[in-house]
Length: 409
Ligand code: UDP
Image (cartoon, protein in one colour):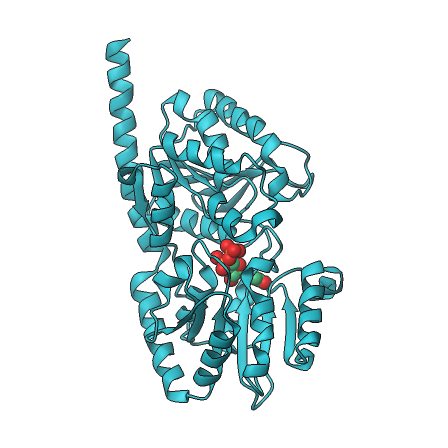
């Protein structure tokens, strides 16, 4: 099949850990790779956000990244991209009208890509599959007035959900949310993300760490909702342990990052500044070393559409303490591969971390079960195989639609 992935702000070629570069970039890169391995031809359409970018770049055999000229050729926050989505969609349509490479299916990632997709694909008889990655309703519920999404987001997400051929949900909680938004249940399919078990595994180099100091590791973009501040505030309940936060800008630039500065203030106020280390951005290739260096990985966001980092930790055989939200409820099995705690509950989090760090046997058991679960249930090959079935089904329906339109016309 010819598959068009649309990922307007998240290029599979971008560096990860910055404010708008994380799970979606990894997800699109890994899925495209796994689909190409199955013999499909993938083109990833992402916004041209630097003048230095070529019109197209081969990512690997079978995967080409196309840089779409929509809006200024410089980095912009994703919440500022809505005005350019019309141009993005029209560019795609024009491209598919003149290029012999016309996709059999379009898979849009994030709601703004969905807008571009429904501008270009349905009129040309091309089916559309949508993965939201995050939902405006959930973000608004948790962030209230601090939510910087365009006000039209929730309305557009509803419209996309009712227009596209299939919506891919990444966790059970998202299915419920989509149904509440009015997306017909029969159009929703659950396909969790995966993890690359050849890269993320217990064996291999380990990032340096001080001897005799238990390490709690937390990884993610430095944004408030990832819960790093809440984690740091629990440290007085976990005496002797250090807390390492990976993510954000490169280490040299942390001093000018507002969230990094806030986290340092939180650590100072809690009297734990000496036990908190902000490591900054780590290249994906080195991430396994960091997970391996941890005794426990903490993933304590306020909400999480899927959450790749706990799964990566599990694939490295590490126990995970996670808040019981979104995708983490599906990936982390409470008291089997890790512990789930309620969000915004520092006492529960602190007590759970301390108990787990005090219990070597339990950590070992959790780590082994986590590795087993990550390997058996969450591979990108599995996700790509499930998607292949979805693409074929929507392709067949679109084909029938075109035939009956031709007969009627
Ligand atoms: N990541 C990375 N380097 C960093 C921080 C994060 O490579 O310094 C990667 C991490 O390994 C994971 C992704 O970024 O693959 C974050 O995905 P997740 O789903 O946890 O969070 P999101 O960014 O989607 O909110």
